[in-house]
Image (cartoon, rainbow, N blue to C red; front, side):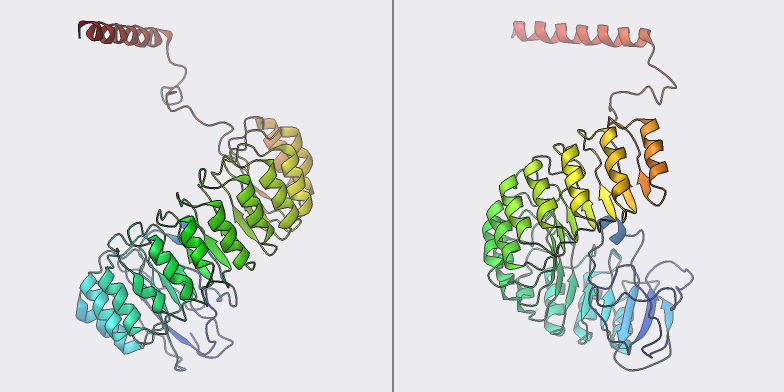
Length: 432
């Protein structure tokens, strides 16, 4: 890997979120069983882009690679293996010898908190840290905050041992914070304290019950530069909190509100989407309460959408699909899995008009027959059409695994046993 600007830099398992200086050299250390090191020129770094990948792509199998970048121009690339990651001295030696700027330790649970503490105390130049899925504690996070005042990117998702991370509000240069599934650490008070982070651009609080509507309103008073926001599965999310945050951050390009079937309504979602004219990615999967009122607002106010997920939106109609595709001509990905009211005639008529479409999910749409699916694929040769099943499987139907239909004799035996059990329960209640 050359230190010259024209050379390609290695890419980590998780996309880079902040543009890096071109004059950097990288040191790759694979924290895993012995394996062939990745080539430094495998793929170019995507610069000047901030990407919030899906969870299944982000959590790749196995430990994430440890990436190290230095300020000095150095054309040498060093690589090696850490077989005993819990060795505090060994980890500390790696950190101090390479003057770390980027450190990814995600999903390496073999690292003990003591080793993480030693790493934090010796890595004063760190700008990007990923502790996702590790054994990080409150002391570890505080040590990184104290030792790395220039920290810009931090991922502490799935760290079960965290309960108090209030010191993160002192990182004035923090641009990206991911704290997904930090159930005990992300409290309403912590969310409010982040209003001091004026440079915050990426925020992931998915599946954190401590995210409340009032906390988001307080957060909106100071945070006004968000481009990526993930509030999936936040059970205490309210319309007022979402509207306040989106109104204060009209530059949001990625918005995920998946699995919020209780806290959000059509009116709140509509008013939120009205402010996001630059939105490119929208995820409303699992929001079964939303109706045509919301879907019409998407088509009206969010014409720049490229990636849309409406999976499980039971009230998504044919007319909603027509309006969406007519307005959003840049759409490349569309997931309408489980939209049971869509008809085959509408799909065959409307989808071929989406010239930019490259990926489509149409599973669990009962009215789309096998012949209709084959016809749809022939009309969309440039599109990767995904359809795993036409209807949702009945968990009590075992005919597929029994090699055919369940014999009538077995059905009768089950019916008799059920009737006998009910009679026994009724007699027992009478005796009581």
